[in-house]
Length: 220
Image 1 (cartoon, rainbow, N blue to C red):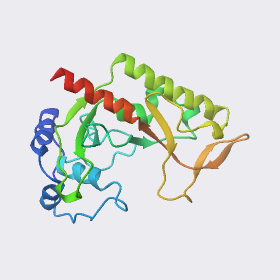
Image 2 (cartoon, rainbow, N blue to C red):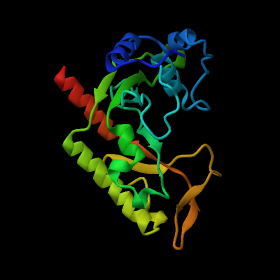
Image 3 (cartoon, rainbow, N blue to C red):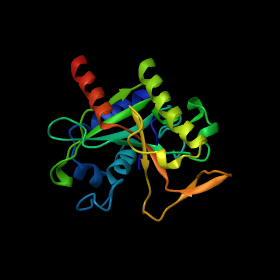
């Protein structure tokens, strides 16, 4: 694994150098074994990109490149040019959300400055190629919508109405189950104190990241 980039210019240069390279090439450069597919290796591509770019790998709460304030997100892209799925951001702090302002939340820290790296999502895994990375810093309007989505979920949690916390909520941010298995549980707000519930994760909706790609195409 490479050392962490010393500044934003170094990170940008590394991301630029990855464009057009296949996942097989990146795996070989890191001396990693490439799995046959991603069915049992869901996070493999993200971890491979972290290694190739020198992300420290200890960023559960803050951004991947904490010194630079930049979060790395892979963006699987279909042949049509649209995102293949929503983008996982981070685990939700369910028990703390009712008392955590948007500015204090881990999801806001993750999304303050994002380096998106598009990846082909179709075809043999080894031959899928990395696209041209791009940076995203939320506009005032985008941040206001994410804040509203976050606060809506926090209010539901404050009322301990966990059954209303569904993937239908949120225009930009969606909150849905995120666990290695269906048996995993975590603490969330309950009627008296806390209750066991399924872990949730924050995701950026695919229609939102599709809009970012569309804006990028227009600006080029």
